[in-house]
Length: 177
View (tube, rainbow, N blue to C red):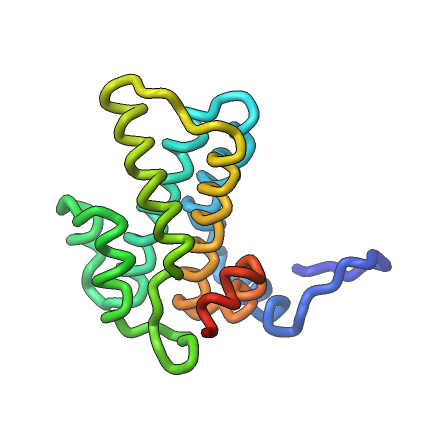
């Protein structure tokens, strides 16, 4: 049940409708958003963990999106190794049927986001496989913000109209060009 109060925080009718549906259905918050919050919380004290957890959130979000939008793919998505997340976002995402589109299209995250995600994967691989140095604070924040925008974009494609408003304005601008 959504309680209203005299707070200055307001949500749109679309968001309120989505929240009510989620509550009534007993659905829980997606794991990818839980993991992302963990990654964000770790960013000041443990950059390595933050980066690895953030990219895990992204990988789970992509798989969740695929299994939600393409019937009967859950088993495959959960049990078979998937292609690299960058390839899934750039090559596969634009081919799947989505609920919401951008100007009638299914677009991958814009180039600026993809560049940060590619950088994140490279750094993560160095950190996880050869004990490399984690990213500096500024780079980590940029990477996490890119992951966040991508998570919200995937939520939007899955039918949550309000999720689009959580994407950074600069990213939305790039998508709408």
